[in-house]
Length: 556
Image (cartoon, rainbow, N blue to C red; front, top):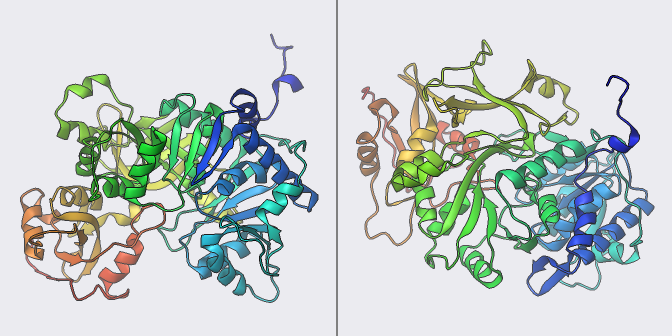
């Protein structure tokens, strides 16, 4: 068989863009998008994306160019996930909860030809552009007039609908010459102070999209609610995934628990995604009522506390848990559920489901290794190491940053920077980010383990544990806590400490408890621990008058 070689007919590059073309044929008259009183069919969405891609292309946007988007979960944001790469350009979604200075830095770094802006992001975008130095040319601004404004001022090139209207619906979209061509540029979510630009290929996104549908067992024509921001790793590839299965995309620009419950009931939503903070907000809502029909919810972004998982499932949500990074374009490890676990008590089921799990089908390998030797750690559930991955959905690299790329890509693996353990059954569990491990008196303390215990306290709404410098121990755990509303009695710092002492080894018990109304978060629900570390060190914003601090010097 040596004479049989790949031919052009068998070498067509993988790309997720073809999913939209197929959706228009198979699901053409089915609803693709719902947003307030607006709705589109898949035929309409396909045509609008082609028209938009056509307008971009005729305006000089094409291969090698970047097009940025600063928008919430609205129909235009969904369409742009297809239309921009269909013009040949690379799509760059920007986090709408960043400040103007950071957005300006990102725009100057990726140098987009065009920047799309929605109504809610208008002032943020204009502030970012105003910070451009005189020797830097800002992108052309396109206004997504989702409030039906008739005109925009001279600072804008045109409106979104102008581009759609003047585009050619028969435009031949630009297919990649190679499946390794870049399709998206995503900046890391901002849990650290120095976000990096992650570049993914058509092949990687195609693989991740198919893998995500299979692993979560997404059926044809689901009703999908966009509680996960599309700017976060392109919504874990589900914009393209919904086209592949002809789903209905229910758009909601901002998270509000009561609105979410109403949309679930009104549209018969059966699938949604979100970080653990979304689960916590849904299950803690004052309007909380058990669902009439079950809703599958996929969570990732941080290790979900078992107590939050249990509370969410008691309402009728069927929670699936996975693990991924911006650098993997979506979830590449999932807690593959075994039927025999359904017979276990609820608390044990929640504990098992809180583990990240095993590699998905399309990921080649996943392991936990000693970062020094590179050897696999013992499968005992306690020996920690760094999580490493390899597979088609791993990024091409960091944009304009070869040093950072080489640093995390070594020995044929992508080193994630996440600390975890491998259990005897082959399921991995994250214990922390490497920088979040607290080393106190020579003992390694997992902030995630301490947080999991604190989340079981009936009065606690949210919690984050970070290291606080200590002259005697080096570091000690500092717990930042927000309490539930409507409590008849608020716990004191000593109450929290005593609660932990009953459930944790004494060296893991927080030595400091800081009460705050709300913990700082990224737009995807990750608590910004670098902000809290600064507060714990005494270098950040004041921890407020409600904080209570104690610093015992006796080892417990």
